[in-house]
Amino acid sequence: MFVGALTLDILLGDVRSLKQKRSVVRPIVAELQRACSASVAETGDQDLYRRSEIGVAVVAATAAHCSHLLDTCERLVAERPEVELLSARQRLFSPEED
Image (cartoon, rainbow, N blue to C red; front, side, top):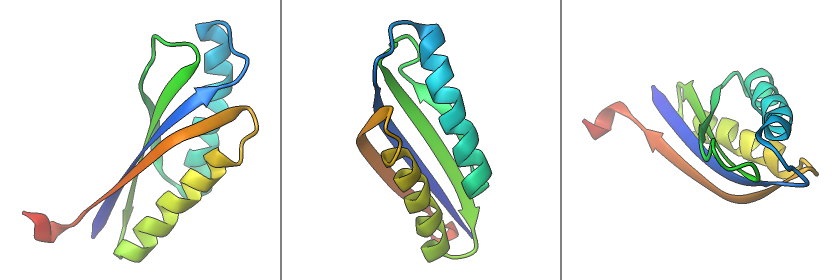
């Protein structure tokens, strides 16, 4: 079993309030949950209205499948025109690390 974690740092487009930020971030979180069967949440920069950190977690039987799911999530966010993906950090955890 492998657990994959992905942290996405995104810059939001023309957003002027936290309410507008939620209207951009919520559909992204929902799309990632639906498309990748992943656990997704806004994990940082909640008080900044033009930045957001989104955390994604997946569990898979192989490291390759885990990486594929995380790559798909990253690509889905990168393709959205209303945000700019500033950075993406992936990490894989396995039972052998204990």
